[in-house]
Image (cartoon, rainbow, N blue to C red; front, side):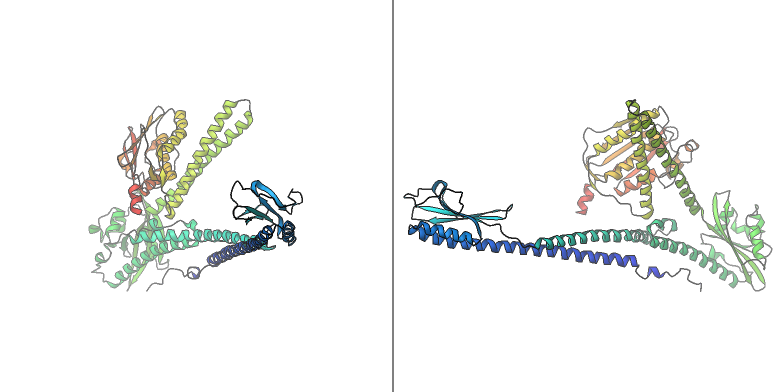
Length: 616
């Protein structure tokens, strides 16, 4: 049995210190938030209870003073009433006490500045408004004013107005309240920090989860399952597992072939039933470099006939001696038993990984050549390198333009306002172009990681198309292209991600401007059906797209195979991103084009209301 190739990584089985610290930070944040909020609530209750107790005591006290005052009034004893009020003031509970009767006339007051009577009135009169018991609290000075009615006779009344001293606050209470608020705020900050760290660490797990779902649905290609290695060690480990899976699959297939070769006799080689279904090519040569076995895949790679090639010399199907030197070296007993190298087949533009192995069977020595198609991997690597080069160039151009126009605007000063205005407009246009480039790069990263999402909201499309018209009108004028927007008189609202949808339409219009020559025409038409689904048609009179390229222009890093666009910069990402955005909205993009007659890209976006209703 072969040794298991996967490397054991203790870091994948033992929780990382950073992960544990994030959860500990979250626990501390929850505790701090709970302690701070509970302490603040408790202290507020204590403060309110203390205030309530003082108000209750003052109320009961003034009721007692009022009952004694009524008795003194019935006895016509004015000095006794004065003593009662002065004694109440001496207790320190009241700032001022006053007895009033009809029309705010003062009978007695502890305020020496007030004018009050020396004797009881012969007629008390009737107040404009009836006297009633009430209280009023002034929070600015913490003072309570109590109104307590006095009944002199059946039809005669007066009232005691008692202004309390400022209600005392618990001295150190505010410090504890401040401490509890600071504790709660710190808990909130720590909680947000912990949540951010946990979410950041969950990004690779979400990407790996998405890849596993694709695998469960039948996607087995390693290139389709790879996640972005920028997401951390988990993503790198997952990618390593996929690559080691491919290595293990190839190694097991090779070992099975070697075992089959060594277990059959020379006159009944019979490997076709075992190896005919392999997608990899396999060739078996003897010491004279004669073909003993060749499967269908190897015949297709070398443009040979498997039914007539057995028994022939290997040079008959390898006239360019691509594999003969390696096979000769492997059959040498002093040479290494195995050799791996890559070759390119010019006749079919295919890259192959060749594994040559020496197999010793009894007294005979055989050479097993194993061919694996790595064209897709090579193209992916070339596309990535091209993307990096194109992106570098695309980023350099707007940055250079921004710097040059900024320097010229500074040199012009305030002497030429028109030039400065044009310079600022160009800087604004180039900065928007730079923003779209960075947005495309971020979208590619999200596509690679499988984490691209849309955030649906109610969108009014008219503002978005007005912005598109403002952005691209100067570019069209500078290139001598007529850009027309045919918009409906009324735009219904749709449920969509405004930024993502704007990005998709930006890419379609930008492509039309890029590939339409001077004096051409670009027409952007917007229509809505009765269900408020939106259709955007971007029609140009540009160079057009061949039927062969139309099936692949929505692939990432793909550009049309046309010599006329070699001098036009581009990354081959705009259409792929736009198609992905359309699909995430439940729509699609289709293309209608003829070479030299222009192209029409049709973007359809449902209103989104049915999707929202189903979700509800």
